Length: 549
Ligand code: F6P
Image (cartoon, rainbow, N blue to C red; front, side, top):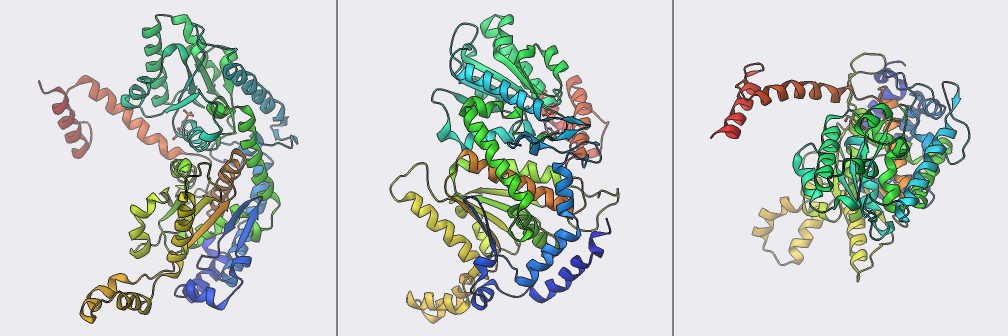
């Protein structure tokens, strides 16, 4: 691909930026009464209003041209077709096949993979229905009432955000817990609340070699055997989700209790695979399949909607506009829904592990910004934490605001209050408050001119802070599936525009290598001089604290 910054659309955007960078959205809304109809799009009941962005017709035209000029649509079709677009691991990228409800063939190396995907789905349904129906019980006959998922990264964050978000759809009496951190506190604190005889451990690891997961799984196994004094019972209380069946068997997992997935499913894109086992155990297979159907709806939208009305492409283009032309370093996600409190953590891995790259597909270092820092918090909590910076800080923070129109927990007028805050915040961020408006408020409050002179500058809001508003009827499995797929495809589109491979993660390997070296030094409890002055002194000081008699 020609250098991104040499593309005609990129150069046109650079010139256009100089013209529009100081135009206020307040004025754009005044001058164009049709902004919403022009700058909004819908997929099923999911409405994306992107009119509160620092764009006009020309901006949006140039951004859509950038998508075309970088081959977004062609790359999209290559991904769905199973081409090996993960170029550093020579793999296809086919999380979309996992939710391919059309069952149209998808070929990997000449093999239609749909039969084996459907086989695993059938295995998930059979297993989870037997567990949830009480037909498959613990070694001593107890019903399973706790599921402990042991996994990290994509083997944790996806099922975790879904289970957290879908509590209203969970079967009563079935609890799900997620252990990921190698910090022994994580597993210890969860094991305090479960009984071995009624607990099912799901060891989720694509490689079945991730240090944290293997250590937690072994510790859980040791805990189980110690309390039950029944080694044989392990086989009934531990199952595995992995692409490494050999390693799972060595751990003691029975073949019928292994749920496989494949190397053409990236970890951070894997919740639609057997990694979703905790979801199916917690919500039931019907709800898990509704999740898949919602993601498939979004896949079909992504494949067919014109760029101008294509939700993932629009979100990607808005993000590129601020990341690469306004120099925004981060992107925030405010979910005005308490069930979505783990959404930022999930999106952090999805986005930052995919697009936190500096080497492009041609093996050259990029000379433009790539993946943003992703962060966020639920609304309305976010308003009482960092909205001061968003409203009056010096750093631009483009943000997505999501909310369901209906609440699962009607309680007085609280959902109405939440909605009013949701609408008020994006309006305030866009509109700001002028000096005249702030002065008028202070005068109306009876302040003296002397006070007003001192206070007035602090009461002005510049506004012109861009937001995307995403509103939908209900937070249910189908809608959640569509929303998560929407963000997957947004990340994909940005990776194509930045000409980077969004599907490998070599950057996470180096820290692991160093950790294993340092671990061996710590184990020998002798002062070290093997590293840089800082690391040596930190290690030695820590050991002095740990082993001071
Ligand atoms: O963070 C690195 C990573 O490889 C992620 O991509 C992955 O989701 C996570 O570790 C866990 O890997 P596994 O599922 O193989 O244990």
